[in-house]
Amino acid sequence: MSLFRLILWGILLFFIIRFILRFLYPLFQAGRMVQSKMRDMQQQMDKMQQQQNAPPNSKPTVKEGEYIDYEEVK
Image (cartoon, rainbow, N blue to C red; front, side, top):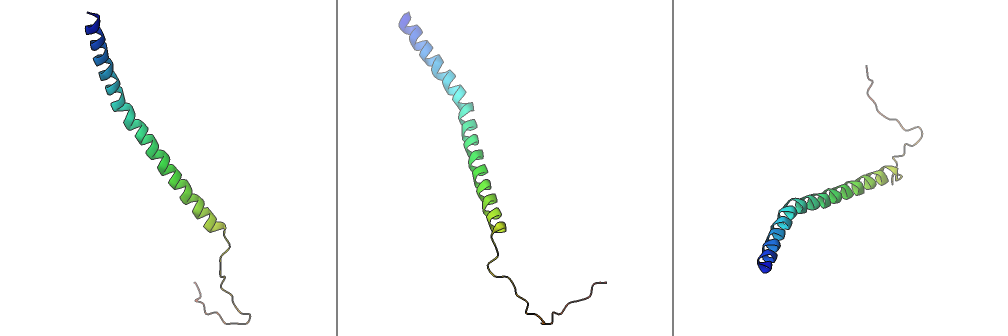
């Protein structure tokens, strides 16, 4: 009887663990995916902020006395 109980408990434990892992593994996988996406988004935001804070390489210079054509807004 005890060997039969041991095998039965083993099978029962196997199915319980399998059932739980079917729900938990996708949650862990989704959590990792969300972390990865957030990390990528943070890197993009940092890159954009660096571009905004960086001084422009070439500023358009206007020579003094040079005529600039413009349209009058009414």
